[in-house]
Length: 474
Image 1 (tube, helix red, strand yellow):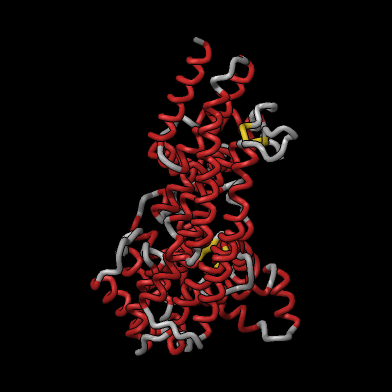
Image 2 (cartoon, rainbow, N blue to C red):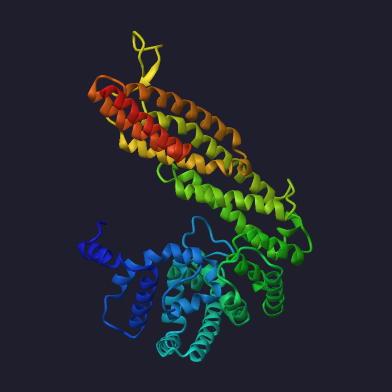
């Protein structure tokens, strides 16, 4: 759907705001919305929020004034995922499940109570009453946990009650998400100090943090054993190297091999990391780096980091289920990269076409084909291709695709060498039209050289091209 004129004008008007100013405005708008103000809150927030989304993701924080729904999500916020490409997995709750569960609570499980608690949360938020807000939030967590658990308990397998509940929530996966939400809501008081004291973005698993995670694990195990493994899940979503959580897992499971760890409740850490890897493989398979190299490179980086991290932290036996999945994912990535590299030289040729100049159009030396204009779309695709190739080279060793990368690099290197040499000859032509078209192709090849080699080499090529053209004019 095309963006309306109002939205475009609003986006343009707000585009000059800094990140700090944008966040301040979001807070003010959300507070006004909580107070029942008449501003077009959703319209303005819809324009502002995307500007802070990437920044919030990198900082692992969420801006704005927390609403009652966000307070509900606080105990399980580390489990939330934006998309669920496959079936429900323990340790992952789809964001799309939040509102169906909230609406179920509001209309059937707690029709009056939830409204009253929500209003108290709003009142304490607007009054900046931290103590009152904390007390109201605690009641929200405990009340909703009990309501969800009792509601699910009434929906016995195969019963009409369960069928209707699944239909109301929007699927079996949402029901299972609700069950996991309730588990974390139930132990929210035990999570409070741990979560509030944890930095949002942690570079390394320190001994101090490891002790805190282990202590929380023991507390949860004593209070609600099913919730104990989530101590590691919560922590791993704050750590830049989440595979380091295996250092704690090995102590809890009393083993350091994947086969035995995978049979324990704490195996959730390994399962989530393997899922991250497998989803990275899916992204690499479905997104063409010639169209958009950045997300593919990001997933390739994530894949190689997790793959290496798992094998460094625990002993992976070839006969284990995790080893099978790990080897399968590595093989898939190697094949995907090989296929991408096989196509790479052809994209360069399409952007910088050459033709044979022999007597009958064959067998003679190849020269730049200047019978056509530069295909800007092909040049942009070639630039994205070499950007991906250069980025992928950093992970070739860890990802086991060195051979495919080297073959493509050599082929493209040789082609660019030939093209650079011959385009300079064309720029010395007596024909002004040939020189002008050659200059456009020179700019295209220099752009590729800048990405594929170095900016200095690209600058030198441009300078040589201008000298060649000037010599023809003189």
